[in-house]
Length: 516
Image 1 (cartoon, rainbow, N blue to C red):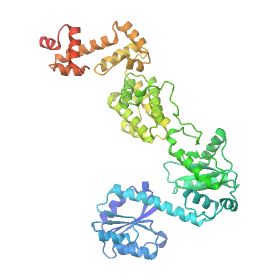
Image 2 (image 1 turned 180 degrees about the vertical axis):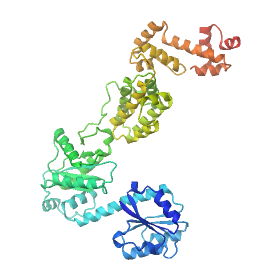
Image 3 (image 1 turned 90 degrees about the vertical axis):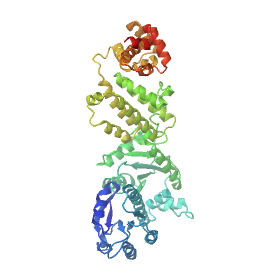
Image 4 (image 1 turned 60 degrees about the horizontal axis):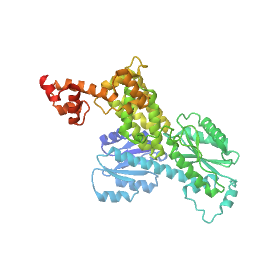
C-alpha cells in the first residue's frame, strides 16, 4: 500500500475524501490529515507520504508554499492539487513544483480515482526502476533491461555479457506467471512465492526469477519439452504458490538461442496470457496449446447461431419446455461459432449476458424461486463477467438455465406430445414453426410432423390455426377491433387472418363479433 496525506483547511472535505474514495481498492492507505502546510511538515522524516492531496488556499502556509518546501527538502512525494478556484495562474505555479494533477472542488470521485490509479502504476514503475539500478550489472538487471528496452547495450557484446553474468546458455525460454486480481508489487504472498521460486529453480544458475510488472518472470535454460514437461511445471508452480488461493495464469514463449532474443519469447508468452480466456484453465499455455473452441462441433453448421435474437428465442423455449438436455449443446455451439469467426472476449461475454438476461426476463418468476439459486438474478448476471475462461462462461450460464428448465411445470416428462401441445397453448401468438419445435424436442421435422398428425389427427399448421382462431373468438367477444385481435393471436396480416377465420368458422370475424 502507498501512503496518502490530505491537507485542507476544511474539516468536512478532509473527512469526505477519506470516505469518498475506495483507497484500499486503489492500493492506498491514509496515513494522516492536516489543516495547513505547517501541520503537514511536522510528519516524521521516516513517514513521508507517497502521495499528498493539497488545497491551494489555506491559512498559514498555503498549498504552493508547502509544495515549494517539500521540493526544497527533497521529499519523494507525489502531489495532487485541489482548488475551489478555476485559476490558471495557480495551476501554472503548482505545475512548476511537479504536481501530478490539478482538480477543482467539489472533487469528482471518478476523476480522482482514475488519477490515483494512474499514479499508483507510475510509483510502482519508478520504484522498480530504482531497484533495478541498485542491482545493476546483475543477471536480473540484464534481463529486465532487455525486456523493458531500457538497456544501453549498443556497444556491448551480448555473448560477452552473457558469459560475464553466467548466462551463456545454449537455449532460453521465458515463462510468465500472473495471479489475476492481486497486486503483485504489494502482496506479501506473491513475494514469498517468488522467493520459493528462486530456491526451486534459480539456485543452480540455470534459471532466473524476476518481477516485470505485472508478471513474475521465470527464464529457463532447461526449456520445456512436450505436454508432460509443461504439466510438471504447472504442478510445481501450483505447489510453490502455497497460500495463494486465487487462480494462476502461466504461459511460455518460444525457445530462442541467444540472450538478446528473449524479448521474442516474452512477447509470445504475454500475447498468450492476454488470450487466456480462449484456453482451458490449469495449464501452461504455449503456441502449441489448442484453444477451447479451435474447431466447431460437428453439428455447429447453423449460421443462425450468430443471430442474438434467434438464439435468445431458442434458449428461452428450451427453458420453457423443460428441455434441459438441449441447453448446453446450444450454448456450446454459440461459443464455438463466435470464437471461430474471431469474436473477442468482451463481445462473447456481452452475448451470453444478453441471452441469459432475455431468458430471465421472459420466464415465470416462479421458476427462479424454485431453482433455489443462491442469490438474486442480478447476482447471477453479474457473475457472467467474472468467468475468466470461455468454457467456464458456457458452463456457468448453462448450469443456471438447466436449473430453470428442470423446474418447468411438467409432471410427466416422458409425454413429449403433451409438453408440445401445452407449449403451443401458451405460445400460439408467436412465430411458431414445426422446424423450430423439432429442434427443441430433438426430432427431425418430418418425424415430428407424423407424430403430431398421429396424436392430434391434424397437421401442425392446421392445429395451430385452430388454436389461434379459438383464442381470436374469445377476444372478439371482448369488443377488440379485428386488426387488434389478428395481431394478438399471431397473424401479422389482417387479410390472412380474415380468410383463416372465415374458412374455419364459416363467417367473417366482424360477423361473428356482431352475433356475439
